[in-house]
Length: 178
Image (cartoon, rainbow, N blue to C red; front, side, top):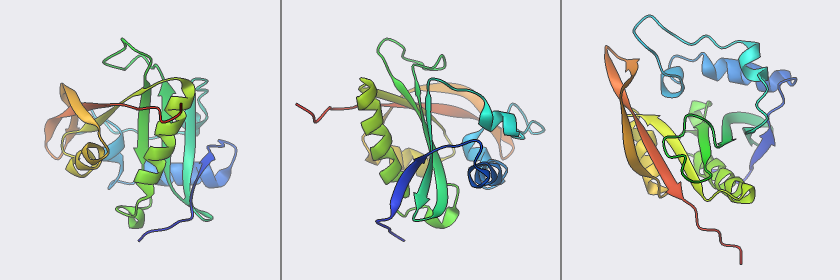
């Protein structure tokens, strides 16, 4: 499935469509283990409305739409504390295509291009992200987009009977503007 109707809309925590979709995706067992780390078999993140409404003055948080249909979420954080390389101004990337029929549709590439441009607009030419080592589909996607693994956080999250590493990836952006 491909679409030319992809668009980014700023997350509005007062918009029930936005919060309902985030709750649906964040609580989906096929997606949750790709987004949130777990300490052990029994720990699980149960999102609340406060998690969505939590003020994040340094964040850009967006819903990804295909026409009028919300299909995912994406965010950038400016110089968050969890960056592994804080030697230069960097954005932290979060990306989730929550509507599974859009996996492989080009929506993630569309959102990534949008976020990379936003990072450049902040004056940041470096993006860092974390992806769990069992999420090989995401790792391959980011590698195809020019991201490179630079560090591993050992035994970072529990999934499917064992602990897995968090792979930290980065990309140095080239500003096409003169």
